[in-house]
Image (cartoon, rainbow, N blue to C red; front, side):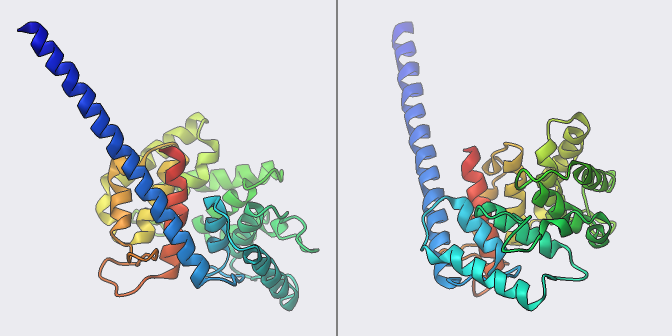
Length: 288
């Protein structure tokens, strides 16, 4: 009787393991398929990416990070459009919003271009302007730190100043915010920016507090961008976002054609939401 029970238990465990393994593979396969569909959707709807926050750098960055082959002229179109914009504006992308320079630097680094000298323009030098960059508060410091870590560009002293700017603005509850109330997006982005230094003890504590706040406030993730940013943050520190149910939640915003909506009850896809969703799926795939 004991032998039969043991035999049954072993058989049950083997069957369960096989089913679980098959489910996991199916899940991964589904995510990969969704990622490819979203990439194709973006290529179709943004064949000529510009210098801009929508249909521009984030699209280029997300597409490149997918590692999937795209039409040869996709990146060439972006670079030509960026050069045209720089010439028209005499190298000045903005007098006030220095995140413009960070965003462009991140995209250029991703596609193998040097933001220290892109067709005669030193874009990264603007990112290293601490005073002007931090006029935008946390947003400016976060994206500057990401941009400066997108390649081997030096600026170590400036990086430390941005790190301190960010961690000194963490709220007592672990969140980060634009005002007094914790915000999902800015908390997630802060985690991602600090993840380059996650082995440092003080930053590890900072990140863990922020993660704890995110986990306790998943109900605040009411739009797809918040979900995407949280997935990216978790992946940046090696955590599986589906353990929090976030991949399933992100997929609920999909339109079935590769696009993603901003809100669940929206009638149509949103380009920014779709770009961020692709970026999030790329990062998630790295940790599963």
